[in-house]
Structure formats: structure tokens, C-alpha cells
Image 1 (cartoon, rainbow over the protein chains, first blue to last red):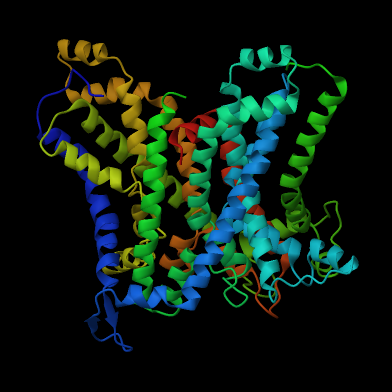
Image 2: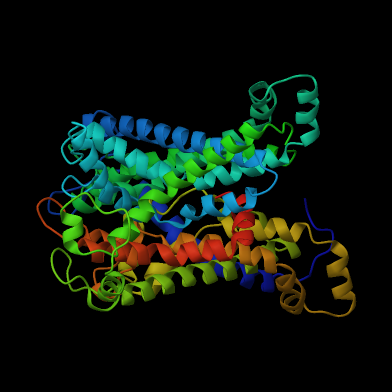
Length: 293
Length: 284
């Protein structure tokens, strides 16, 4: 789609796009290029010179059990976060959509956690599950269940999933509610007159009509779980115990800044870059279709 | 609603209320913890109702820092200022550069227009976390560590807002620009007197989304700021949480967590209409 009418001249638009192009070059293209470039080199242990190693960094990564374990952790983590926060979001949206009055009040009460930073969400849940003073761990202990996420990997994983999903419910709720409200009521009423129960209508009409939005949310939530949850993991577990909660982006950070393993960290960045690239292409394919929705 | 069964009606409310309780509970506990004494916290279980130390704890957090323990004596008022400057800087900066470039893309034909468009389009794809190490090096080489410029500019390099404005400008009728040109209106005059005023709702919607995005930044300020005076409140909370056997003055830590949450939550609730619009339209 193009405008038929436009202004003449080329220097004014050049000045207008210059700030954004400049910032994109300095803080986006140059660093991304550097990441790709660095991924082909291996610095010596003293950081004095670097040696060209081709794809060795990648080869090394893909045979490194820690990296592969981090891959698996990321898949489990992002699937769990996306599915649980979407399920809860859909559940609450379906309930709010049933109300004629009061849906607005519930919307206000449900959307504000979107504003809470992942790192802060991490702190809130860490406080609840702190081994010495946490309320949740206190009652779990009373029930005879030993809670110690600083030692037990599965508990640590559960906690970071819980904290990450919790902050994400609002987002999914809002999109599902908008999707539900866009479904014409006449379709639902027609089905009801034909005798379809609530669950029958939900399963055969609502879910299929929501599928584009569900798919979109799935992609966006996976991207969220890949990157934005860094704060949750850093505050709650710092990737531990024994790397059981080290997702890919956390590994880029810990290898690059903590261990200063720059070649490997750059190669990891490039792998992540490819992964996000694929997800983004999928997402844009979807957005093109959303126009008809 | 199709059916009007009373029981279903109450079950709907019940379900929603349970969901809200689940969402509120951790925040409520944090609030309670920020109003009690240290003893009330270190000897669990925590009471369920707020205590009497509200003013004491918040005054400590804001102006004096926690009285004892891990990360003590660091007041957060300066950090809140830094967070506000960073959030507003990112918001305003992104809105300005996006308005300008979207205006250029929609209302002008210039050489390499498509190339420029694609260059900006690609920046949508990568969150700063992916290119964190080289971006850090760029900022370090430009001597921008521990500066507001270094905190703000790398986070402006993304095209979401540009696309939103571009899409919106596309929907503005051509007659508008035709009329303006016929009256001898210069492009910049058209931009300031017509385009910006009719984009007000979109600007407000983006403002909410970007403010939250900016305020909640964590990894970038964590790397960028070594000077205690430049820290932001969201990143600083990490240095207050004890690891291992260290101990912290929890009421102050929890008051700090509340202070880190309150500004963006207020923005969302007070600008709810714009927030919903911004979220649903910007998609990310």
C-alpha cells in the first residue's frame, strides 16, 4: 500500500530517517556484525590476540554437553511458561467474556501485573519460597515436603517457571479477551439455539476461531520466555543449581561476562540470532494473515 | 450471555476472583513484608495483615538504605530518579525518531527508500540480549558506560514504534495532504500541525508500552552501570537479595521491591485505555 500524494525533495526525508538509521547502525548492525565476526575467532587465554578458527566455536558448542543441556532446559522452560500462562490467560478471558457487567473491572484487576519487571517478579516469588523465611516453604515443610530450590534442580525449575508465567498471564488474558470479544455473538447464539452446550460451543466454535490469536501468542510467549525471563532467572537461581535453570540467553551472559569466553559467547549469540530470526519470520507470516481477522 | 443460569453466573465470578487472588497474593505478601519489623519476617510464618512499620521502612528504603545486612545503607531515591530518566528517555527518544522516520517513509519518495525501510525493519528481529556482548563493547568504546546516554540509546534501536506510526499514517486520507499542499503548507508544517496532533492517541498508547519497557530494563543497566550513582531500582534489587548465608534487612528490601513496582503499575492503571490499545496494536 502506497500513498498517491506525497511531498517532493530528497534531502528532507534523508534528514528525517537519519537519526533512526544512525542509531540502528551504531547499536544494532555493528554489534550484530561483531557477534557474527567474533564467533569465527578464538581469543588466546590472555586476550592478547585472536586466532581465526572458522566454525570451530560452533562445532565445539554443538558437542558441548553443557550447551546441549542448556538447549533442553530452554525448550522445557519456554514450553512450560508459554503453555501455563496461555492456559490461565484463556481461562480467565473466557470467564470475563461471559459477563455482561463487570468485565471492565476484572480487566483492570487482571492487567496490571504486566507492568511488573521480570526481575521484581523473581524477587516476589523468591521471597515466598525462601528456605528460611518464605511463607510457601514454611507451609510445605509443615506438610512434610522439604523445599530447597538452591539445591534441588527440579524445584528451582518449577520456581522460575512459576514466577515467569505469573507475570505473563495479564498479557495473554488481554489478547484472548480481545479475541473472544471479536467473535460475533450471533454465531454463539445460533449454536446455543441448536442445543449446543457451553463446552460444546467452546470446543467447536470458540477455539477454532481463536486459533490465529493462539498461534500468535505462542510465538510471542516463546520469545518472551527466551529473553525477557533473564531477570527472573538471575534473581532467583542465577542459572543454578548445577546449571539446571541456565537457559540459552543466560548462558550467553554467563559465558560472555562471567567466564569471559568471548568466542563461545559470540557463537551462542549467533545461534540465538538464527532462532529469533526464524520465530520472527513465522510471526510476520501470521501478521499478514491477521488483517482478515 | 447466552444462558442465564444463576449458578453459572456465580461460578464465573468465583473463577475470576480466584484468578485475581493468585495474581495479587505475592504482591500482597510483599506489601505486608514491607510494613513489619525484621523479626516478624525472620521468624515465620509471616503475618497476613500489614504491620505498623510502614513509614519507617519506606523512609529507610528511600532515604537511608537498609539499616543492616546485605546491601545496607543504599538509599533508592536516586535509583528511582535514574529509572525515571532512563524510562522517559527511551520513551521520548523512540517516539521522536519513529515519528520522523515513519513520516519520511509514508510521505516522501527518496532514493534508497526501500533499502532504508528494510534496514530498519530488520532491527525488529533482535532483542538487545542477543547482541549484548558486542553492544557493551560499542558503548564502552564510546565512553558511554555509566551515563544516561549509554543507558538509553542502545534500547532505542528497534523499529516497533516506526511500524506502528507507519501503519497509522497509511490510514490517514490522502485529501488531508492534498489540501495542505494546496494551501502551500510545507512538509514540516504539515507534520507538526496536522500529523502529530492526529497521532495523539497512538503516541499515548506507545508512551505506556515504552515507559514500562524502559522502567523494567534489567540486564542492560546491570552490565552498563558500575557507578552506584547510576544504578536503576529494578537492577539494584538484585544487589539487595542475599545469596547463601548472607542476611538482609527484609522489610527494606521488600519496600524497595514495592517502590520498583509502583510507578509502572500506576502508569498502566491510570492510562488503561491507551495501554490496552498500545499492547494490542504494537503486538510486542
